[in-house]
Image (tube, rainbow, N blue to C red):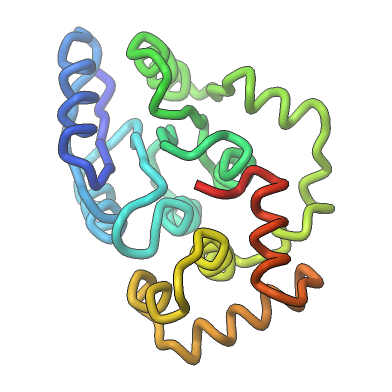
Length: 208
């Protein structure tokens, strides 16, 4: 029996995935969580084979969950199921230890197939992610790949048009701290303004 844990802050999404998995004789949903801190607590307390993880949740966020799980000796396989297109997060998620990445628009049959594959020790890569890996991309050469997880969260907030005060509230930071991260982002990416940052995000498909 494959023990699956669902992590998504949208109740309807969790219920939908749970309904799909309940129809599979070899799968059991053993828990659910709506924020990233709850995920880390629960996954450490109960046996889980596969964690189905959304990236945009309250708390530190899905990428931070991946980074934290990577430090644990015993951890589940992670399938990221996200609303964000592959170009935005897939490579970074895989580098942080995810065994698969797919968007929420994929078919239910593909989700089931992905869970079985990664539970067996494999990886689940969609054609879109395969294209990213194959064509190309020397990800270390991309400026935004130089950012830390927290800097990347601030980057996405700025790129989405959020004010510094809004970013601070969403990430649980002080306003001066966000300004410090903003300065580091500009320095690492050789940017001179938020307008340049937004143009960069748009040209690299990093906007929501």
